[in-house]
Amino acid sequence: MAKNAAQSSLDQRLAMAKRCSHEGVKAGAKAAVVATIATAIPTCKNSALGKSPSQALIISTVAGAAYFIVADKTVLATARKNSFKQNHH
Image 1 (cartoon, rainbow, N blue to C red):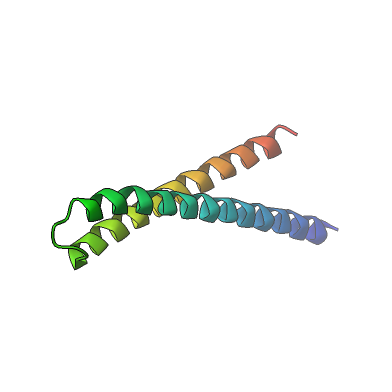
Image 2: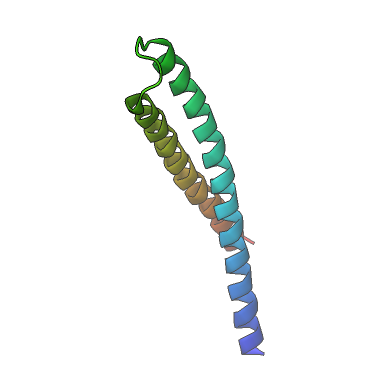
C-alpha cells in the first residue's frame, strides 16, 4: 500500500510539473511573438540599409530573452500556486 501511495504522489508531482512547464511554454511563446513584433517594426523602419544580420540578431535576442524570462516566471508562479493549494487542502 505504501508503494502505491508513493507512486500516486510521484504521479501527481509529475503531472503538476508538466502543467507548470506547459503554462511556461505557452506564456513564453506569446511573449516572444509580442517582443518580435515590437522590436522588428522599429528596428526595420529605422534602418536605411534594409534587412541586415544585425537587425535579425537584435530581434532574435529580444524574442529569446522575452521567451525565457516569461516562461521562467510563469513556471515559478504556477508551481508556487499549485504548491500553496496542495499544502492548504
